[in-house]
Amino acid sequence: MPIVKVLVLAIVQGLAELLPVSSSAHVVVAERLLGMDPTSPQMTLLLVMLHTGTMFAVIVYFWNQWKRTYFASGDAFQRFLVRVVWATLLTAVVGYPIVKVIEKTLFRGSSKAEIEQLFGRLDLVAPALAAAGVLILLAGLLESRRMLAQERVYGESVTMRQAGIMGIIQGLCLPFRGFSRSGATISTGMLAGASKDRAERFSFAMAVVLTPAVVGKEALRLLKASHEAAAAGAPIDLHGSIATSLLGAVFSFLAGLIALRWLSSWLEEGRWYLFGIYCLVASGVVLYLHHLGY
Image: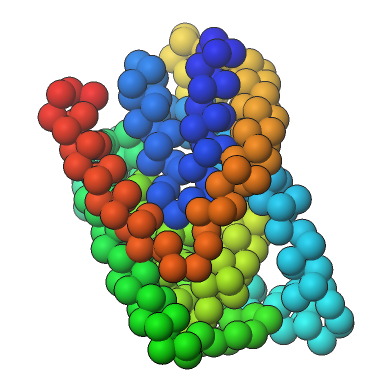
């Protein structure tokens, strides 16, 4: 894969990661425009590694906040650990069955049923973006009312109830490219009564915990595809794909650090609804690209 294309995808991922606009949807659209197949094992691994790169950027960016909240004391860390384990468990309980149901129904009779085969379908990305946009708009309206009424809730961590709801929503996001994980989880946290700052910190912490499992899953998928391709006489350049993915992770880490500093001002209180509007507009653009044949 040309390095220039990897760099373009890394920049797209870096710019979109902090914002609740589904970075994976933007990367999928970019892959389509670049003539690439987002559903191939090489591309899904690259996408996951791009996420991994920006997740490390997120850790660097949020580390001081996390130290002041989640790692301030042994008791604070214990409360955080219980909540993040609870949320991640609910993510698995909700997300895994949905993936299996989709694979068993939409791919009935297919010799190879994998949820990743849907990741490149812009006709599915568009409504997922729209759904995320509506959810963000609702949370943004609630945030504006709280600000006007001066009833904002402050605190260092989300409650068990809020963590559980965010974990469930994260599970719903897993099968669908375009249903922004951060946008959906932060918005539901806000709708459940958490302040945006608390919901945002916990949302990105959940993502950091989830990322290694997703990377491992896609690495195994690529390995399996490599064996199948070799048996069919059309081997995949496994080492090249892994090297490209690692390079993409480095690029996305650097792009993410730059983007986090540049875009942080957009996360000022009272502007959350703007991301909902953006997602709705982006949904229309993606649907139009699908109409054009991408």
